Length: 77
Image 1 (cartoon, rainbow, N blue to C red):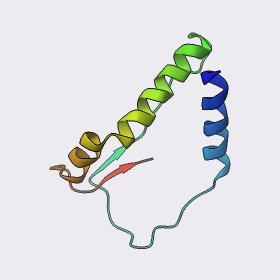
Image 2 (image 1 turned 120 degrees about the vertical axis):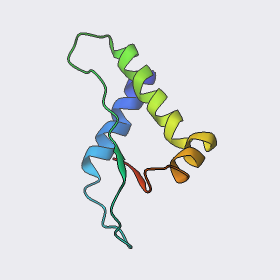
Image 3 (image 1 turned 180 degrees about the horizontal axis):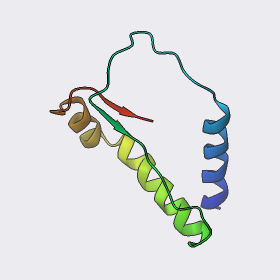
Image 4 (image 1 turned 120 degrees about the horizontal axis):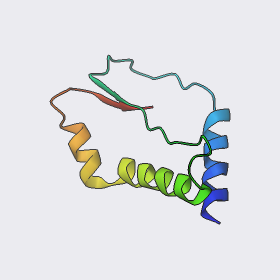
């Protein structure tokens, strides 16, 4: 079930806690992926949204675009 898999990933990320950066730098752009989990959409749609975010932040073309951004450092939170 994709929804259950996404829920496990979300819970893992929530419980991971803050990460301290080795070399702290100011971010030019912060991307915060959000999904509508208010109950107005079905669980499958929510899973679909999170799968899209996961693909976006792991796609080589998207990573290259973030690395070469005119905004400078791009952070995905």
